[in-house]
Length: 164
Image (cartoon, rainbow, N blue to C red; front, side):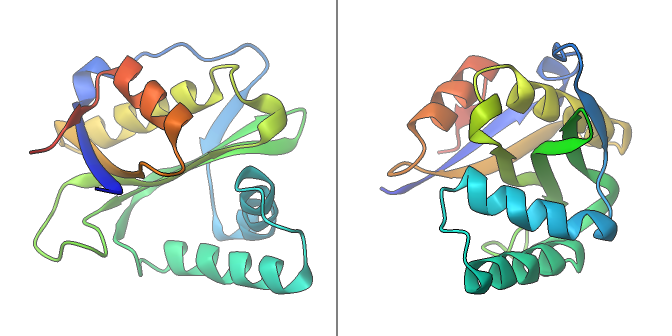
């Protein structure tokens, strides 16, 4: 199985520690160019014009709700000294399950220079609080087991459990 679906209770994720000097704020369409550039670096994609164009298009589709319905404030970025260094996107429902109305983390990315500093944990904690305020009790995600050993360690540490 290359895809693993995980789930966690929001209550266990709220109040997670935020690293000093990191600002978390809602992402907007104006952030798409910075998000597209971050995605290339975070996923170790060559920084070509074609890849940047595709990344911008992917970000536009996320904001347009083509991968699930975003809540008003469920796209969150992490900044350090004015530079976007991390982002998380949560939607209600997913492109792979039409009948689901649960919140899902569709993307979580952190700039390689900032990994291991608690940025991903802070982003998850932030959206957990926001999604909880919207009336939800849990959150899910899918992880590609072939490419995400560090991610699965993080999710295990935070209490995400496999959905059977």
